[in-house]
Image 1 (tube, rainbow, N blue to C red):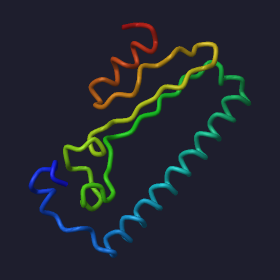
Image 2 (image 1 turned 90 degrees about the horizontal axis):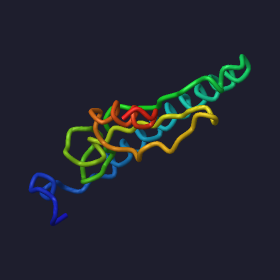
Image 3 (image 1 turned 60 degrees about the horizontal axis):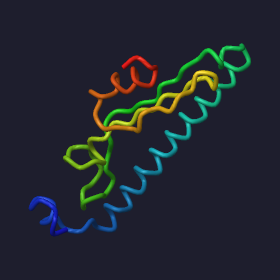
Image 4 (image 1 turned 90 degrees about the vertical axis):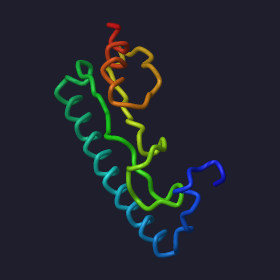
Amino acid sequence: MSDKPLYIRSRDLLTAEEIAQLDAVHRKRMQSLQAVDELIASLLATLESVGQLDNTYLFFTSDNGYHLGEHRLNAGKYTPYETDVHVLSWPAAPESQRVSPPPPSPGASTWLRRLLIWLGRP
């Protein structure tokens, strides 16, 4: 913790109750993610059944990150740490159109630039 700012270094360890609450939040978030995963699988199956999967681009993105206990902090997204500021995005293209996408990068401002590079239009 010596490399952390004072407001982090001076925080107490999380209590057992706080850790249990964070675990419960994490479980609920994973259940939500599983529902999204099932929805995407259904969408892909529908696209394939109507013959449009090879004509479809999907773009997955999220808002900025979220911390769950890192740095002795309860759940939130209000610190300058990577877990709070990283914006995930990833394209998925038909096999015939696939190119290597640029590596994921933080910040929504780079999303359009990454998309244009991926589409071959820098």
